[in-house]
Amino acid sequence: MKPIVQTLTDASAGAKTSNPIIMDYFGKPEVSLQVVVSGVVNWTIQQTLDDPNNGGTVTWFPHPDTNLVAQTVNRQGNYAYIPVSVRLLLNSGSGSATLTVVQTGI
Image (cartoon, rainbow, N blue to C red; front, side, top):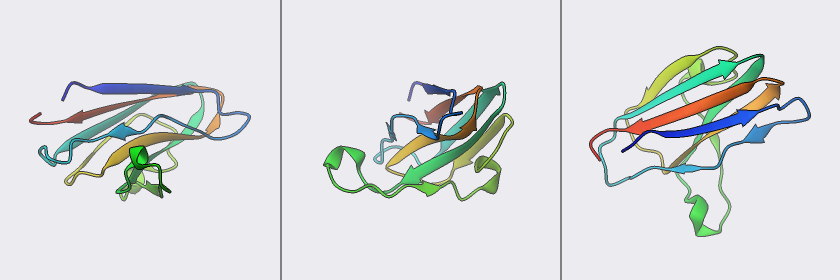
């Protein structure tokens, strides 16, 4: 999979979420994640097993690795399994955060 990159800026007026990144759940389960921050922000990687394109309710969960939850610095992480979708939550701050997602073997 070609890297997918999404950037969020300025959550000083309230939390913001990126568009969902739909994973290929027929692909290999190794997924790399990277968040790079600029300025002051607090961010969280979220995941779901619900399909955001299905029109139903989607329940988002924080990443199980606490190094990817409520963070303020650059981080890398991964999944050893494939969620249906991943997104970036910008909890607060006036800076920006950029999420890059790569799924191997596609």
